[in-house]
Structure formats: structure tokens, C-alpha cells
Image 1: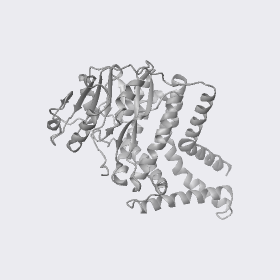
Image 2: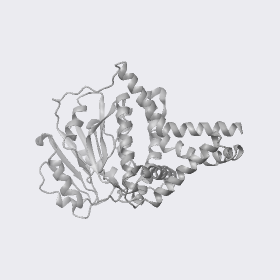
Image 3: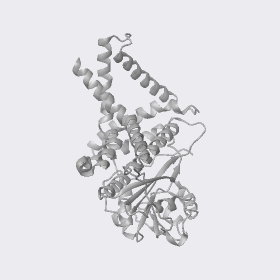
Image 4: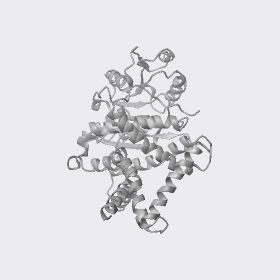
Length: 396
């Protein structure tokens, strides 16, 4: 029984550390460093204004072309220094034709569909500017996003800059929108603290940028291109910085089914990334970057979901031994665990009903997120995850 208790405590520690503890530890370290005036703030030069390329890899995005180009041409950056590239591999809905005639815009089309990473590898051969900024076709950028990203590159230590992904915030929302919105707000806070400590661990594909010379062709079966590209830049000794005011905004997934599909794909890509970036697990070589990478990413995509599964039978056994109604430590934990899963079940019941009390959907979204890791692991092992676009349907 002592062995079971020890295992229970280890599982609890890993779970709490992954989802709450790391954030608390990170915030505490940042506060201490600020008090001691040990800063990692990037010094920027507002006069730094190089030519840049906005790179958009697209597959059948005709519904978004007009809005994306209207948004792009309104961005606050010298028009003569902003080059726009669309790579439309496999698009057969007229996307390339709709892009004709826009200023500073070049379209590289290929009839064959090779997935997003294939389009990126091919398109990067045409990028001649020192900085390339990647963005999705279905997202709108904040007006100053390009300017703010470029400012951070004025520091030679910075090799990659991640913008913020924002979900349209509605007064009332269904499970997918509420859960995704809350999740990204928490992620944004962690990224700000990660950057202040040393480096962000991975960029959001909706908006991120790198120094063009640091781009290396990525394996054609890569699922999370943005994650792999950005962390390989960090492995070269550069930092990934973050500016929440450089943002890409989009609506949430149309429903939980669409969000679940997206999460499974991300999870399969997360397992693949851990395998391909395994050298980053060497904390003796990469120091703080490894600590951040393991704490913020690796545990979420590997060990912690397994801990959640193992905790169910272990707490049941310990609570039974103690007495389910004894109000002992393990029996209380057992009932709290049961309450959590009951709350997730309630979220499932309410998933398509809009509510202003968005916190109701947190347990359900958390459950879906961890279930997707398990399913993503099996999808990766079976090598059944396609690299081609599988964009989740978005809410209107």
C-alpha cells in the first residue's frame, strides 16, 4: 500500500506541475528576477526596417482571399518593403486566380498537392528578404503586427518571433469556443513569461517569423511545421521571442468534433516532434531551453495524460482501503476526481448550447485535450496522420 501511495503522489505531482505548477514556478522566477533587476528583455531598435516577406501557404482558400488581402494591404509597414508570397499547391478552387492583380503579391502555384510543409519548402526558395513572416490564409493580423515582429529582430540574439493567436471572444459561446479561448489566454501568459525567462518553446503557425538564413528544409512528413522550424532555430543558439500585440485572430472551431480533430492532429505531431527534437531533452547541453521545453511541451504530449489515466484506478484502490465516506485524504481526492469527470460529462451535455458561464466548459475541454493526446499517440504509431491540410471548420 505504501508503494501505491508513493506512485499516487508522483502522479499527482506530475499532473499538477504540468498544468499549474510550471506556470506558478515560472511566474515566481520572473518576479524574483524583476526584483533583482536581472532582466532578459530584448532591446529593440525602432529604426530597424528591413524588407520582409509575408508568406502564406494555402490550399483552397478562395473564401478567405479577399479578406486576407484587404487586411494584409492595410498593415502598418512600408508598402515597398513588404513582399507578399502565396504558395497554393494543389488548390483547384480558383484561389491562384483570385490573387492576380494585387500589388507586391506573387503566387507560386503547383497542380500537385504536397501538404503545407511541401509548399513551405518549395516557396522558401523564392524568399529573398532577411526576414520571412508566416501566416495562415484564414487569419487577420493586428495592424501593427509586422512592425512589432520586426522590432524584435533588431536584436541579433533573436532568431524567431512568435505572434499571439487570438480567438474571437463572444459574450456567450459553445464548448469549443469557450474552451479554446480560455486555453489560448493561459498559453499567452505562459509564453510571455517563457520569453522573459529565456525563450518561447515553439511558435504558433497562425503568425510567426524567422531570419530567412536560418530556415532549413523540413522533412516532408512533418506534421507541426511551425513547432519544428521554430525550435530548430532555438537549437542554433538563438531565442524565440514573443509579442502578444503582434497577433492573428480567428474564430474558434465550429464545434467540439472539429476541435477534437484538430487536437488529435496536433498531438500526433507533438509525439513526432519529441522524437525529432530528442536532443533538446539534454538539459546539460541546452540548459534553460530544455527545462522550458520539457515543462511546457514534452510533459503535456507524453507523460501527463498517462498519469491521469493511471490515477483513476490507484485513487479508487486507496480510497476503498481508507473508506469512500471516511473523508480521509485519498477518499477526498477520489471524490474530487469523480466530480471533475462528472463536470466534463456536463460539458459534453451542454457542448452545443451557448452560455456566458464559460468556466463550465473547462473540465470538458481539458478532458478532450488529454484524450486527443492518447489518440494522437496511436495515430502517430500507426503512421496514419496525413501531412496534408486538415483545417478544422471554424465558427462564423
